[in-house]
Image 1 (cartoon, protein in one colour):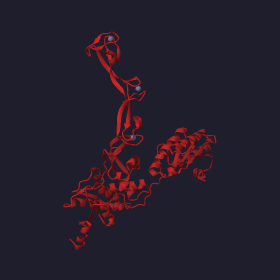
Image 2 (cartoon, rainbow, N blue to C red):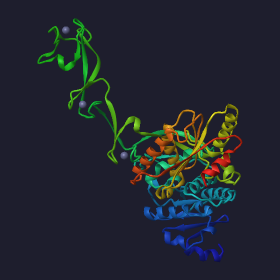
Image 3 (spheres, helix red, strand yellow):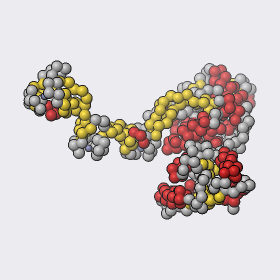
Image 4 (cartoon, rainbow, N blue to C red):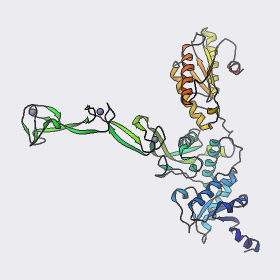
Length: 461
Ligand SMILES: [Zn+2]
Ligand SMILES: [Zn+2]
Ligand SMILES: [Zn+2]
């Protein structure tokens, strides 16, 4: 070994096959190093907290090249399994060639990724996840984990989301699949509490009338001789079963009588019913969810697609936050095409159609991240849509800006817009614990020879 390298021993650097591996046991020893010149990091501590700090420090680094560095654990150290999944596995310091093989692949693949300047948490995370999958040439497989809110941990991905941000995490993954950058392989479905998104749920049967869980199932008895049908309790006597209608003893099931079904009775309100109501009680937040209210989410493994690789190499422009396409809410560009068509139509049909713009301003909503804003578009869009006619068309270019095309609408300010203005203002106001939120709605009647762009411009004057 060269003397220069021998000197470096005290800083715990290992040189092998042209690669430098840095051995660390605490975050303080890594902060002094320039990680740019290190090819891999070896965690050499049994302290789970120290190890976690190290992984967070590297993986959350703003420099993508550092965030993607291979991280190994010295195989003489035992660490939590929940922690291990975020690393590249164990390394045997006496047998480095296997690990160096991996370092070689990861380093070479890292160089093929172009470093884009990114804005927005979700966008940065997506880039890291795609880059991680690409450099590892592998799949992210979720692991069952009792400590996770949803019962599953995602290697690498979980490092970038707090436990309570699980919906943003799943939605980011869904969106990446939707746009073709990730492919997914379904593993499971989880059902989450509507309030806290946890899946530690206790399922209980309850009375459909009074919601009490103090209910009892009992068999229905059918007496063959007289055809009397009643709950078993009506047949019960000291000596067994006797028919309350014909007084005969019931001795043999299948010969004297049978039990064609069962029935519930409620000990609280005496209601009798065939089908009990199911309630999923959340152990974490105590919410009582009806089954239909539970949020069903797919859990899958994720791989990068060739379109995703192309995107990583910078082949595709960064998608801006205006490229929204949620259920029932179209993008502004599509809206413009449809509205232009409507302009042509009214020229021929001489009918009256309108375009409206809904806008509101709120500082608190404005601080939300992109993923949350997209969810807002979905929710607010659904609310607006519920007041529209089936022929109306809606688009959004932001969470607080919606465009409506209202064909065959003569009134200057149609009733449905009044309803939207009041109800949306009230609903948002209530949710934000403020007074009525001011919803601004402008309308414009379509006239021949104008363009959709000019109308939209007028709204923004
Ligand atoms: Zn809950
Ligand atoms: Zn009841
Ligand atoms: Zn009878």
